[in-house]
Image (cartoon, rainbow, N blue to C red; front, side, top):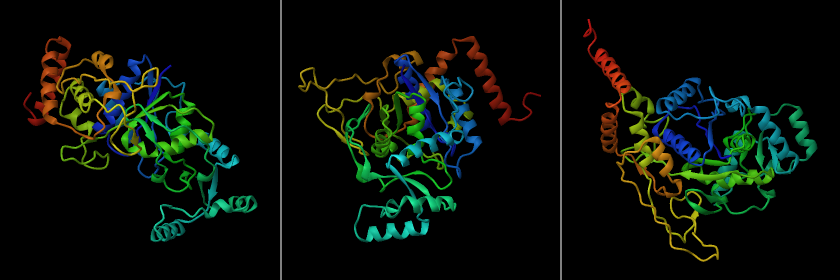
Length: 390
């Protein structure tokens, strides 16, 4: 069975970029007669907050994106909050330590800052001098028993060989290990995992077959594939979605001035028009069939070859009009994630206004929707003009 996951971190208000990623997971899963789940990645203890979990769930419910597994749904693959799965991550980190694919690092923050500064002055791309990699087993055991704080790092000197990655959106990729820190941290001093270890463990344990996530994780893909190889696990298929930009060209942020879903809910926009708008933004592209892409770059795509291995003509997908009206069933039937543009895309609010008008006109043919719209309008008037109904 095809199984996808939408795994936001509850560290700020839910914005349109997150809703679009959830939508793409929903469309891809339903088109393949599959399912998807909601998982909450709350291992950032300083910024995670329960109110943001409520915000995510409320936004998905408003949009009609009903996940199959997750909080309030099927619990058979849970728990779905990462802070409730710490024993599982420690079990996998122990496997990596025992196999020599990871090691404990006792370096303080001050020492790490000094090391990074010295390496930078030398013109090195390294971010750590691997000092703790050479500690004896006896020294490590003594320091752990003494309660010294430490992290668990991946040992980049013992990485298994694996195939070069391919991406559902960008096509065949070339490894870019130079973009990664030296021996990345997998478990922090508070015994919480980093996103890298937690996501790999959870995707495996939950049986995830496909991962659609934001383009910002493209540079982390080689690390995640390394972890799968070190643990002798089969990775899912990955697809990275180019991010949405605010109207001023800045990246949407949960802690900035991005387009928050709450605003669209409060202002009375039709959920169907918002989903239609997000789905059409960046959809419909013809890619060069002979190129590949370096991880982290927004260009290129996989080659298209026939049975004999000879290049074929690139498949041209007819891009839908950017203001075409689709029902959810039509989106599911026609959507093709491989035809997304490889460029970051600015949202055009004028297109949403056009789409919203047409969805409202459709809604007026439905008596139940007429009453709902009348109730919404009445609430807006009463809020703006207190006492007007007296």
